[in-house]
Length: 311
Image 1 (tube, rainbow, N blue to C red):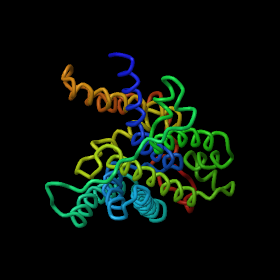
Image 2 (cartoon, rainbow, N blue to C red):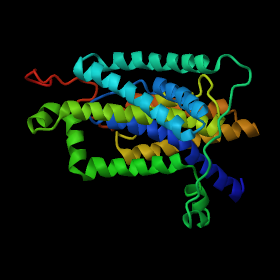
Image 3 (cartoon, one colour):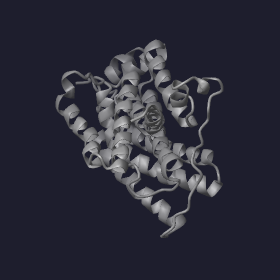
Image 4 (cartoon, helix red, strand yellow):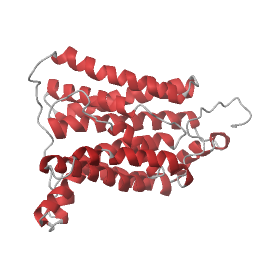
């Protein structure tokens, strides 16, 4: 591999990192309030489908992104209402919403486009070189010559770290996921925090799905997410629910994805073998991750203010 190929591959890794970051940071944000979301794959598929249709119908990628974001917000609102207000099981509701997203993605596309051998295309996101910074040798072409959502995902990771660990609001949010009764006794709005985190988290997941047709294919296809939603759950555990560690884990998952595609083109190594690596890592994380990863103390549990104890 020569130097130019290395720079090109590094740039592709940052291009591929966006869905992992958005979906995983959305999972972590909701998890910090005790909500364990498992419908990532479904809402990403729905976001990819509705995001594509919005961009196609309105002739604007921005409209497509907004469509996906609104859709994600509705999923988050439904999840928050069913689990936080009605106190239903989070895992069961998450799986139900996964299937809703899965069915909606196919149904909406077929109703709007129909069955066709040549699906319509939308323009993909263009690169947005940052003046001066993109002219820096090597680093400039890798980091500062990307599309706008690449910059957004990196800045989002930095912002979430600062918000969660450097501000009083972030401390309050984390306290909700650790001990909501104690947080409630201090005047922190537990229910509101859960609603906001669920809605914003699901918005990020839907935007992660919309990114795929807007960057990779220019159209929606069934299965376009290819398990990235499930991997984002493992990535959140891998990152210990911390934004910066999640960012580093996303780099690993994206690098494996890019290397697998390169192996498929060159035929040097069976790309299927490389594609299994993230899933093997997922299994290892689920088997041994609990030994060194500390999850939010109240993760997956519903807070009932009327109960005397959270146990």
